[in-house]
Amino acid sequence: MGSRAGESKSGESNNAGAAILIGLGANLPTPEHGLPVATLEAALAALEKCGIEIRARSRWWESAPIPASDQPRYVNGVAEIGTDLGPVPLLALLHEVEAAFGRARSLPNAPRVLDLDLLAHGRLLRDGPEPPLLPHPRLHLREFVLRPLAEIHPGWRHPRTGHGLAEMIAALPPGQIVRPFP
Image 1 (cartoon, rainbow, N blue to C red):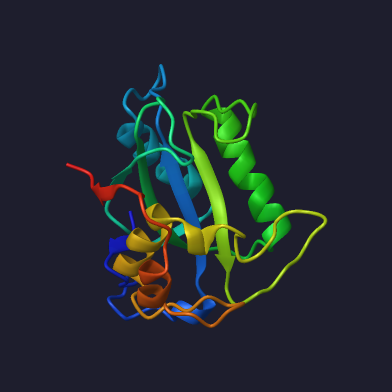
Image 2: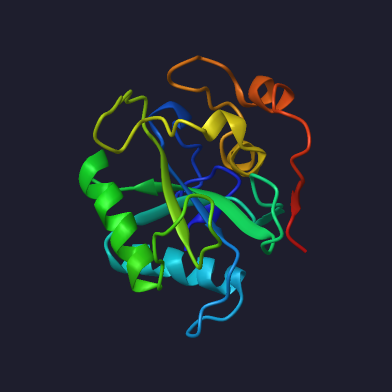
């Protein structure tokens, strides 16, 4: 599997500006993999089997659901990947992997066995109406994305706004509860 803390498999620092980034999350167990953290590990392995290179990945983080609800806490992380796929086929592949793990798309913000989000595809800017919107439109509002991203690419800057991670983290709305997964 890929290395951590922003190192490529060769040990060289990755070009954060050109990074293809995905967010991973889960808060429900799956029959095949069990607890969410095992499901997330299996999802990374499934992506590799599909030809996606995991170049770097954060540790897992635990977060409260947004908006606040009584559903279980999430386990989240961020990975930098390598692929020749453009954003549309890549998003389709992420949705295929989610479906293979039992993800059923129902209501927004519903509990889920697996969530794979395309956060950024290099510095590409992509607006609607067709997905994916790039960078992910709520990336800058989610501590459970920004903290793991800061682990693997501390110098990353938002392609649309130019804001750095420290600036975006400082501007987060209050009340998000995010901590490293035990």
